[in-house]
Image 1 (cartoon, rainbow, N blue to C red):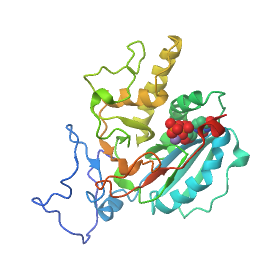
Image 2 (cartoon, rainbow, N blue to C red):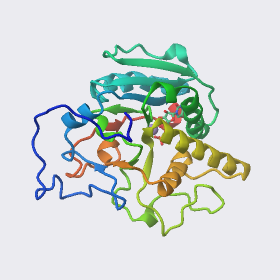
Image 3 (cartoon, rainbow, N blue to C red):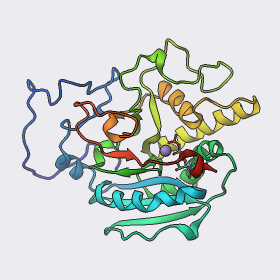
Image 4 (tube, rainbow, N blue to C red):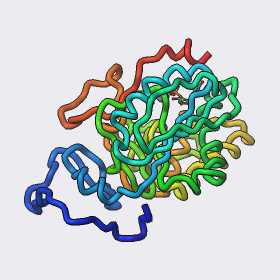
Length: 294
Ligand code: UDP
Ligand code: MN
């Protein structure tokens, strides 16, 4: 969708918004820079689906080495919950194209397998995602899709994830830090790193496993993060949480236009769901870190 234009919608019947009855009073629904924070109850999918009806969404996901095992459940649940009714291209970055499972897709949806190199260290696999997304944005994504949604593969969808997330640039709140003070955020704290954030700065702690935006903005973000990582490498330093640290630095100084609540990324093994998190839309699949990474 051309985000510079006012979206046109045809005549529709839907409940009227009530100015004196806020949809949520238990959680923050806008950032101090007036970006919506997306929670259950704050949006009407019927209106949004109409606004975004001519939009194509690219989903990027990496399945390098043993991580191909996560693809089947990821794709099956995405077909059930992710952007249902919209045009979707799944871009699967892998070094093992032969191991990509065949999952039946709804109309208007397709899988594109992008063969890429692997790296020995799992940290390098994570870090180089930014470079690969950046390169493919220029080569392909700009011509093929309107928005990019960049996700981890060791996850499954368990409830609606739709066009309410789409905006020029969006990040997702890390479910382990939504209530934490900024001093407690696990930002990179060594000034030598390009990902450094001082203790008296910071809005949120965003998770590396779910971000996106228009192709143009995702290209800017991934290119900037990749360049920052290259500078770090030359200085023999690697940010504490790898690509996530660089993402947090970028989103501090390039404010996202939407922020996704922890509904959009949860880990049931690590966290007890508080009542204000009404839906779990995209959740971690248990994994044995040692076995899967080596
Ligand atoms: N990844 C991969 N192969 C690897 C390591 C990582 O494909 O050997 C990709 C995969 O998409 C994964 C993401 O990088 O979801 C981030 O790694 P991981 O999920 O292990 O990090 P965590 O969520 O545990 O921080
Ligand atoms: Mn993960």
